[in-house]
Picture: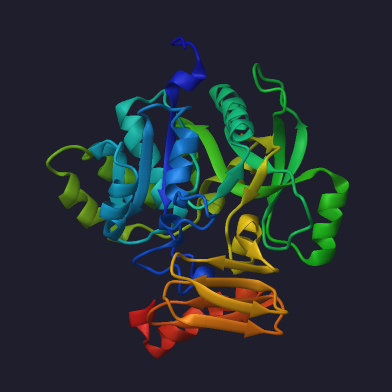
Length: 371
């Protein structure tokens, strides 16, 4: 690798936030989904993400996560350098998390190209993902904010979409296209049209960009957020770091990176996309976990948990057991059972997305001890 290789300037950032409320009661505020092995691989989601990225950015990986997760993340990624573990005092959404990483990296070297990849995604095959990242880095080096879109396998209404524009001619990135627009989660009929057209990709929230360009767009659209992050970054790795973070972070506005940077930048013609020809899953609910654990199927039932004791007859679905209690299922289809020490969830795969509403209702009732 030579100094002219854009990959030598590449730093990977892993935002590890969000509770994953659709995976309650397995995923909770103190143990969110990225800290769990949800695929039966023996590796947690955040560790798998790190291992995908470190060959592309050796010793150049940063994690942004909540203060309460510091010990767990350090245990799972002991290779992480101290200054590269960025701890949020409280959740402030993705623009603050990714923007702070960009501001810190810009202080170190304004020529850095950063890539942001969520901690809770399942991707295979890894070499195909890494090839897409290399193309994204080359495209970013040409002066674009780049997203990696996923070729849709079905017309999902649960994801946002990216409409591809014309080809973007750039060296070492033969699949690059301009982004015409980002589209919110569509209705089923519209999703059918998107997939049939072949011109749309799923928005997986992966962004690769020169740190200066990302911060430039953030300053234009969210000047208050940009100013606060700049203050924090200027104090990073100094004696004033903790005091500055504690003083400024609570004042920052909450906004997603898509609204703060990606969509306005696309409207300005500054965003390109690399189509990702690999499988991708954001493990959004228990139906996803069932899909991702085919090896554990036993007569139509997916069973997860070292202590699991499950009897199944004429039944299909998924059981996640964190206790040694016997779970017997007879004549039920597509069932979801999640058994933990202090909470029990029973639903079916078609209603798995609605678990989030149950969590909200428990919160409103004040049952925070199980959240």
